[in-house]
Length: 535
Image (cartoon, rainbow, N blue to C red; front, side):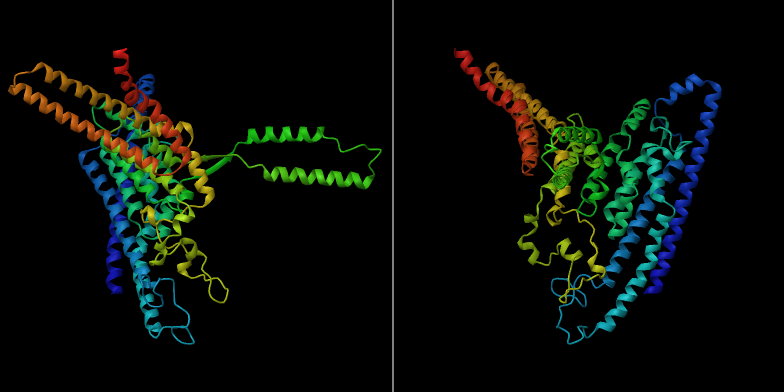
């Protein structure tokens, strides 16, 4: 009932207020303690303080405070995500989603003429009251997210993990900030990932992505955490793993509506444009308009007018060179290096390939038979027209579905965005950073396979008599051979997934790298050895 929903939401809201207040108090208390420590160090020895401040350090917290902070961060994400999903579910039921009253078989709204002259279903009044009741039940749950926005809790969580919450000045360089313990940093990233992954209302997702806090988290200085962990003999591998999973969560939320929060065209190449304009102006000034004695005033006016029109046309035809920024792709690309952990590297490569795969989808891919099976295209929902020529501006005309994370269900991106993503991803340096680790691992593993095969051959020639030691060693070498072959197969499958994206420029550069670094030296060159031996 509505009363039960209000009571439950009220209890959840009170718990959220308590948790957020305690987390804010802890952050202020730790910031004051860190400030006092810095002042004491500055009074003791300024030079020593500067040298120590150049390297990142973890905050010194009691085990109880550290455990409480981790639990509060987890509980905040759980409360906000669960209440938001309840509100979204009630709102969709209130709007009659999922085949409710007033919707046809395709879920696009009422079919005109099915309910008589007034186009109102027989149970319209009852359905209207029920929808109003469902929406009233959703409002108390939305109060939790409103409180989350009012207190700017997302900024607090991001500032905790970046260390800005413990600095004297928010503008201080991240290199001099104290960092939270690894457990708190890991839980902070998990909390933001839970929020982004589990929200169901598009307005909630847009708020999480639009205030630039997620981009601040994308730029998380993991190198500082690694340096601080190295100083204390700790390991930051778990933090890296959760951070790459967070990047994957963001990538699965990208569609034509949310791409604006990740892809930007911040500036033009102004210097190059100025040089081109000066060169064109110089060429135009050198062009003669004609002999002044043979051309009358009217002809001069027409010539000047045609020159002005041609200048305007040339300016409009000249495309503005824009520099694209794609922080999500760039950050995921950093974890594709061959020295990274296997899970981290494969996840990062999947993030990059998923983003490029979205750009490779064209409108022809959307025009498939799946549309006949209750699938609505985003453009059809946003630009639905009624039979009398007027535009339908109801709630369902808005993008009311958040990205599902299923690529084959996502509509294609606009052409401008697809071109921008492909140009960014197909830059030679980025293609090299994406493909070269794969080729490097293929070369290394194939060399290990070759060495294992030679060891097996030598063992077979050396041990004519069958003994237990030779059998055991041969069994171990064969097991190593099987493991290496499986690793080579995994790398080849990654390469196959990359080539199946279908971007011609990316495929051409990837094939060139594979041929130059793996196929020629590891597969074709050994075939020449018998010829050299016999010759």
